[in-house]
Image (cartoon, rainbow, N blue to C red):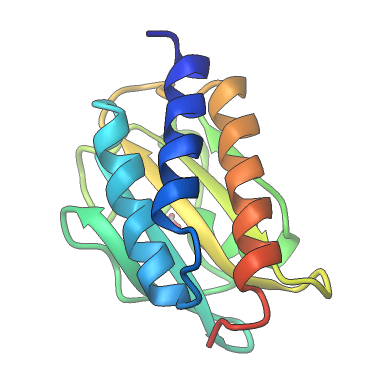
Length: 158
Ligand code: SME
């Protein structure tokens, strides 16, 4: 199955699983689980939430333990949240301020999740132990997922 096809299946499954689900934490937990198990190359898959201005705290995730708190000034997640843009790294060592929660991480993608006012309230972070694990299909599909989550849960997040 191609990456594209796998994402189409995933979107369908998530649509069914989250149908009628109002709770943001339950939604994040379900997305982290489904995404993590859909792709063998995803080794850490989860969310960081903006819990106060300029601060990200870890949310539901799958994989090894993640850093609990990341200020907006630090790391790939902080930069993606601060600049409200997707950051995709083929090689995490090329990003000077990368925070190595796991020494085996080689590549990473972080996608901001915006509420209906255009404010970042969370980021979706996926790390891989393989170099250049994420391509433009991942970027497009994870961005579309983030957009959907933002529109649906942006006013419920805390
Ligand atoms: N690598 C991230 C930190 C989060 S974890 O790896 C789970 C960063 O630099 O923001």
